[in-house]
Image (cartoon, rainbow, N blue to C red):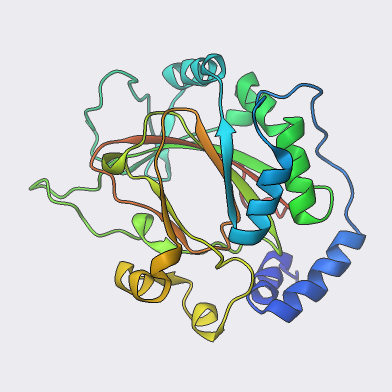
Length: 274
C-alpha cells in the first residue's frame, strides 16, 4: 500500500509538539531546490522587519510591486485563458476593462503562470523574497507554485449574495511549515473582497482550533476581536503570510485580482499552477 506523506504531515501539523519534531527532521534532510536571482524588484522591502513581523504575528507588510512589473503581468492576463470555478473543461479570457461577470462564476484562475510569465518568475526567484522564506522556514525553501485568480461576487438569479466557503475563515495545512506572498493586482478596498487575517494564530493550535479548521465570522469576532486585520491597498500592494493563521477573503461586491506565491519545507505536488 502506498503511503501518502501529505496526509501524514497534515495530521502531524495541527499538534504543536509533533509538528516541531517532524520539522526538526525535515530540516535536516532539506536540500536547496529554488535559487534566487541576483536583482530584486522590491527595492524598499526590509528583510529584517518582514522576518520579525512574520514570526510575531504571522504576516508582514512592506511589499510594493513596481508599476512596470504589474503592467507585464496584466499583459499576460489579457492574452491567457482562465479556468472557470475550478472546472478545467470550462475556460474563458477575462477582460481587463469590462468588469461584467458574463458567465456568473465566482472564481477565474489562470494556469501555468510561472512557466508563461517572466515577471512572475522574477518575483518567485526574487532574492529578498527567497531570503525571507528561507529564514522563516528554517531551511532552504521549496517553491510550491504561483497562482493568480479573479474573485467575483457569488450571486443567485436575483442578484443576492450566496453563502460559499470560498469567503469563510479557515486555516491552511499545506505542509509542516509554509509561507505565502500575496500581491493585489488591482486596487482593493472594502468593496473588492480584501484579505483578512487573524494575527498570532499561526504559532500553535489549542483544542478548539485543532477541532475547528473553519470558523464563522461571529466566532472570529468573539474569540479574536483585537487580532483581526483587514488588508486593503492599491494595485501592487503585497504581504507575506503564514496561512496556518485563520484568514479569509471577504465576499466581494466588485472583482479582485490576486497573485500568490508559496514556499514550504516540502513540496508534495499538490499546489501547482493548474
